[in-house]
Length: 332
Image: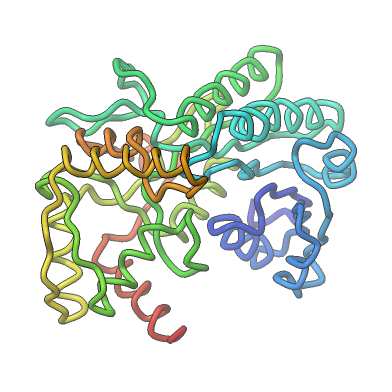
C-alpha cells in the first residue's frame, strides 16, 4: 500500500479517528476523498492531495460523487452519540448508511472496503480476554452497539455476494484530537491532569481496553492491505481497571486528586433521574441506564489476531499517555 499511490475515500474523515487516518494516507502519498455534511470542515484539510465532498452517507448521489475513481473505501462515518430519543439516527447512519456505501462500492468497482465497527459488539470478557471468536451471550446494551452489529451483518452479506471487505473493532480510543464525545477517554485524561476529575465508576475494578488513536489509524491501513476477506480484527491496546488507569495518570501527571467511588446502583439511579429529566423538561441525559449497565462487566480484549495477521503493534498505554499529555499541554 505504501508503494502504490492510489485514491481512497474516507467517510467520517473529519472525525477523531478519521482525521488521523487521512493524515497517514496523505503521508504515504495517496489521494484522499473526504465526505462530510459540514462544508466548513474543508478547512481541516489544506493538503492538495485531499479532495472534500459535501454530503453524507445517507445520500446515494453524494456517495457516487465522492467514491468516483477510488481504489478503496475506509468507512468510518457513524452515528456514535451516547444517546438519542429513539433508534432512528442509529439505524439510518449505521445500518442503512453502510448498505448504501457498499452498494456504491459495488457499482463503482471498488477493490476493497474497510468497515470500522466497535469493540462494543464483542461479548464482555471473563478472566480471559475476549477476542473475535468469543460468542455473544448477552444482549447488546445500547442502540449504537445493536446497529453496529447489524452493520457487520450487512458487510458479511456483501462478502457472501462476492464483495471484498474487512472489519475492524477499535476499543476505547484516546489521543490527540478535539475533545468531543467520541474522544471521551482523552477528556477524562484532560480533566484529571487539571485536577478536575473526582469519580471512579463502581468500585474501580472493572476492566476496559485502551488504545492510542494513531495505532487505530495504522491498524486500519494494515487491515485494508493485509486483512483476510470477510474477517474482523480487534484494534486494541492495554487492559486496565479504572484503578489501574488512574494510578498511571497519577504517576504521569503528578496529580493526586481525591477520587470518589460511585456505586453502580447509585449511577443507575442517577441515570434514571436524568431520563426523567428528559421526559419532563427535554434535558439531554449525561448518561443513560443502558450505558451504566456496561460498567457492570469486564471488557478485557485480545488483539492477538491483528498482531499475528496484520503486524499490528500498539503502543503501551503509559507511552501513549505521555504523547497525549504532551498534546494537551500544547493546547493549553
